[in-house]
Length: 124
Image (cartoon, rainbow, N blue to C red; front, side):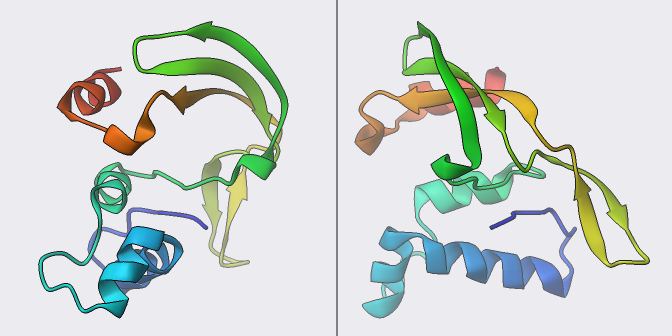
């Protein structure tokens, strides 16, 4: 599933809805008609980051442990599909940089993501 910043066009609503369907917490809220929030903090975080994308773990290969930081274990991996690089208007699809080397972080105590973690994330 891709999360692309569509600058408020009607496509953004579709992307938001797609994200909500994939999030267990949001599905629970939607099912129980929780009026407080459409999205959980994790969905909101992804939606705030331009060109952010949820990538399933299975899309990474050659995962190697590097180090441990304050909030996570750090790994190097190859992202099979790779990030979006350009839009092909003729074919109406995105092009990707395949087999891209990336850094992965496995969060410690990810059930309790607080402001310290978010500050580190946005400032790194």
